[in-house]
Image (cartoon, rainbow, N blue to C red; front, side, top):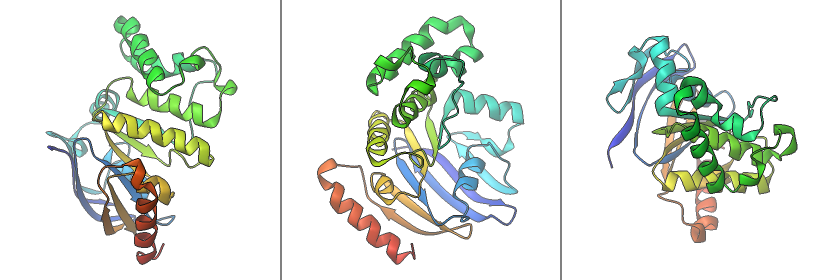
Length: 244
């Protein structure tokens, strides 16, 4: 597979201390580490939402850190998707309007196509019946799956997810991870910050951060459900060896 993301010696103040790694197209990696290790800072700097002190980030042939703020904003809209722990939906819009909003707001000419795409995504993630509901009328897991639909509305090359299951119970977490696994199997690259070892065990690879540096890496390969328990145990053992 081709390389989609190259991170070269990224530093951010005293938080990130020269981080380098690569991702291939269609890969799903988890970023783990204790609180304060720099996980979310890494995600924000790699995606261009924050400006690194030094280093380079390449999304295919585009060097992100060298772009202007307007260029970064367009890049995030067109080529990236984002899912956060805090599900930032607009309370005055129903679910499908929230999903379509970023795309329609940027290009009103293709409104019908974006709503067709929103319906298609909701169907894939089993939330079609929620289209006309308020965000207050759905569960946390359903709302997060709607957020994943929103992140996919522009057909991004990569999704950045920051603790996407952090506020969910186990049942909702399983539903959300099924959604992530589904879109990843269809080819979307995913970089996910998580504290949840079970969530991390479903990823292809785990990077462990400590004090702003990558201290370890665990390669698991593509998730196969029948191997779930073995992967969980392997991940738990590895995290223990990292001092988790």
